[in-house]
Image (cartoon, rainbow, N blue to C red; front, side, top):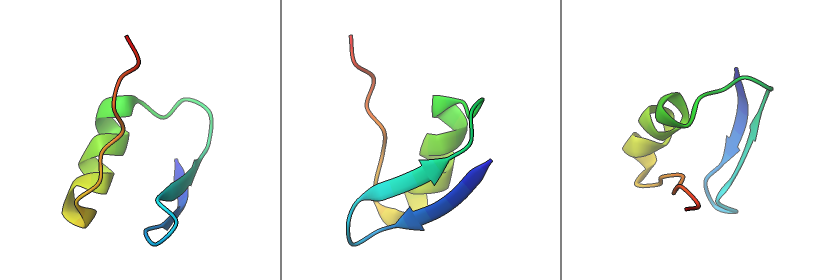
Length: 38
C-alpha cells in the first residue's frame, strides 16, 4: 500500500510488498518514476 506522496520533496512512503511497477503507475501522473538499480 502507498501511504503518502510528498511531490515537492520527491519522497514516497510505502508499506512492505509494494511492487515497483505499481509504484510507477501511481507516480506517473505526477511526472515521477522509481528507477531500477542494476
